[in-house]
Length: 278
Image (cartoon, rainbow, N blue to C red; front, top):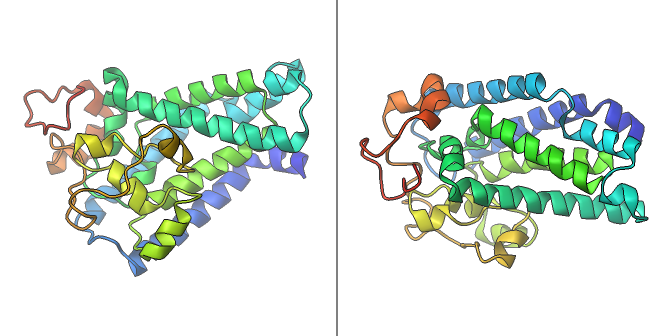
């Protein structure tokens, strides 16, 4: 099974991604949390960013994270290739440790000014729906993959664990960015194990203290453990404002503008108090 999964990893990931995307689009149309105003204007640039990200990854990182795990295993390099650990323990530990590293990377994206310039492309979306979950600057995606590959090389995780993490990241990023109105009791239950849309929506608030919270993608445990968890936005989910004040014009939301946004300063462009890093 592992060999089949590794051999067919790109196809498996693509099928799961497309299936998850279709399901989330259907759900957010049936049960929307907030009224969508700019869907048509936003979707094409957001999906174009996804296409650009995929192109960059394939051109710049032909090996990718799974290939790094296989290379580390062949070379006997990395923690779990050096110490004797039962496969199940190595698998679970690898997924959790890599997820923790991704959490830490996300925090740095907010705290380091140069990294924030890249990451604010994701936060400058004026609404919050499933396409927000694929709206990342190609340079951020390339940097993230480099960090992930370095972490995989050091940990030496089973290749299947890396595939599982990649699938989870794709699926949960779509899920927790979905404009989905979950019943409050179900949301509270899911938050014990998963980052829900309501939890992650707080992270897209225009307010600095709310944006600098709820960094997790997969599980809510790191935010609770490190004190970055915030249960609800101060204005409530219906009234909260999403995005970055400096990038509210239609021209700021075009594909071309998203690609060049990290190069632009916002000091003289009507930035809100949230734009403190640029």
